Image (cartoon, one colour):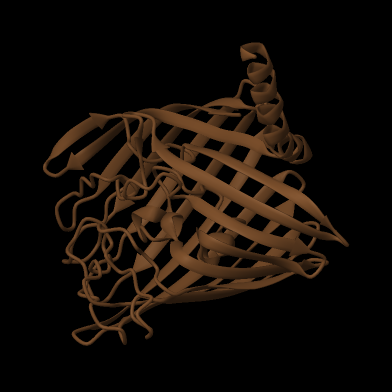
Length: 372
């Protein structure tokens, strides 16, 4: 009798696992991927001293671990998802204010008409600068002048993007752009407080491309002050009518193997207490030479509201040991002009070490990157 009961139990368990087994085998296009990238960084004129450290955030690209997948639903329709964790390789902790999947967490549908996604995702700012900015979201990058650029994500959002030939159009709308306590602008209260929206039009040809985009963040009760000069006190952003807007226009061209990219970014912050504007210009080139790649970029920020006019020059040389592993050496020089707060090459870090007003800063970084 006992043997019979054991056999019956085993049969029931096997039967109950059949749907699960079928589902796992049917979902055969899930991909695990990631990057680990870190190095040793040196900064001079860092809060009155010099600093040598392993950066918490990106060195040449942000470290991440993600899963993406899709399932065909028939008639050209796919279900798609992506969950992506950002982590700090120096300590092994989560980034994005401790979120488990803070870089991306979306589910959507994809067809010939485009793709719709729901969840935490990039605004159009990410797609706007990715082609024209040759340095990318590195330790020494445009983030030194506008820390939002590599962190342009929103919670509670819906997006649509479609590519038709060389033309890409799309937009993102968030009902509550930051639900974490550190940001404290969860929204979803039946008004525009803490909402966000952005739109993009991009055209890519075989050897060139051009992009225009708009990105708007709304304030709300308890919202973190808006950063203008990374490391300096921000602008109070506590009302639903407060707006932080960015207008992008940029492009790139490829001449043989050389890529040249540049752009213009106008930012307007309008609040109950203050109105201000900044103008960012950047131009760079990427030159591959066998296993080496040489990148260089110059960027200039005109910030009349803070009486700050920084100029940033970045050079980077990378050596590819393989398609997945590379070593690199980066150097940055940031010249601060004006009497306002100083910008810093360390602004992409959680711990910003800014020089004194009017003082320049140099940063160097040697690092190693592996993608899987």
